[in-house]
Structures are given as C-alpha cells and as structure tokens.
Length: 279
Image (cartoon, rainbow, N blue to C red; front, side, top):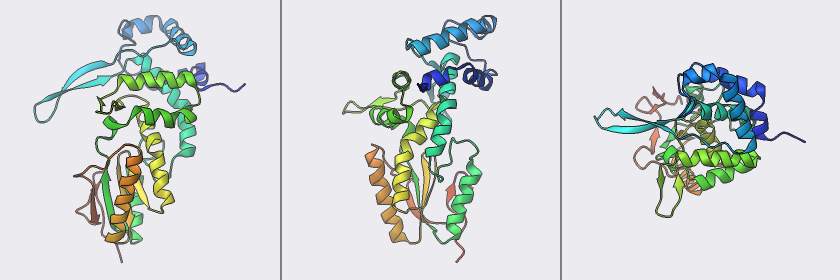
C-alpha cells in the first residue's frame, strides 16, 4: 500500500532534511520546551513529535506574538510559529513541493525552487519586446489576508490526498485566520508560516490556468502580476477577464494598484523599470 503524505513526511530522512533547514534558528521548540532543553533531549522530543503526528493527536502550538513598529509610528502584531510546527510544515513541504512543481504554470515565479525575480523580469521583457506592450499591471487586494479557508481546503484535498494531513492543515489555517466576513467566511493565511508560499501558489493555480486557456500571456509573482496584450482594447478585455476569474476564487483586484498602462520606464514591476516596446 502506498504511504500517505504524513507517513512520508515523518520518515527519518525527510525529518532530518527538515531539521537541517531549521537548525540555525533560535526559536523555542514549544511553549514549554526551550531551545536549550531541545538540545539536551533532542531525540526524545523528535520521536514524541513524530509519534503524535502519525497518531493524528498532534495539535499546533499557539502562535507567538510580537509587536512591530510601522514606519508611521504605529505598531502591529506579528506572529511566528514554534519550531515544532515549523519542522512538521517543512517536512510536508519537502514531500509536496516536487508534486506541485509538476503542476504549476511556467509563468508563475514566486516561492518556487530555481525561480526568482530576475527570471520573472526577463520573461516580462521578452513579452514586451514581442510587441505585447499594453499591460494590465495588477495586484490582488489583501491576498494573504483574504484567502477563504473553505475554498482553499477544497482545492487542497485532492492534491494532498491524506485526511490526517488535511485536518492538521485546517488547524494551522484556523490559527492564522485574519478575519471573518459578514457571511461568516473565515479568511487569511499566516504569511510567516513555512507552508504559506506553497498554499499561495496552489490557490492561484486555477487562475493561472484560466489565463493560459484564454491565451493571455502573463507573469505572476505571488499576488503581483502582469498581463500582456497588443492594444489598449485587448488590455481592457484581459483585465475584465482576470477580475472575473479572481471573483471565482472570492478574490479581488486591488482597486488602486491595478491599472492598464503602456510599457515604459514609468512602469515599475518587482522593483525594476520596464522597457518601451521596440517596434
């Protein structure tokens, strides 16, 4: 019988890989176990964690909270996970990421191995050089804070294909929920968690596929994206299409940051100026 996701993630090799990625952090293991205590009883804590996860009895630790001052002088609360939860999430990510890489669209560049900002910009410049210089320069409004849990878990279920893992992910999502709408929809994923970047791309995969089916060239970097067209009229149509497709995911284009513009140095994408088209 094929092993489930959690069984694979909790294998000694995967746990060892996960720990090597995290061992330089000074985060406490849990609310009751300091980093020094972990070092003194390392094997015992890891075996106990593994046994709890496989038995389905593990429950995420409460998030750590810290005040952080913003540039305007006001403060906001940021959250962080304990090391035990990071180890589990890193192990799950190690198993899921290769599977996700076979799924994701070639025009998605954020939070993926061997992909970066420079590659995204090169792809954008390539489209512009080909004459697709009428752009939809867009941003998804409050993306991480507004992802609806019900729709995200629905999309995750066939991909994860492990009921115990799904229950654990639902608990992690519940911890990081930012808001509940008037209709009672619980929304938001914690930006600082190990799994959040993968969840971001998994949730937007249907959006990427819809753009591809509509033959709309695009470059997406997390919740920022460009659509490339050859005329203002086609850009208007592409923006309307993107708005409609995001609506199916219960997401919205940012009303101020999303615009139609012709490429040139006045357009900044991922921190760099875009070129004029060469015609």
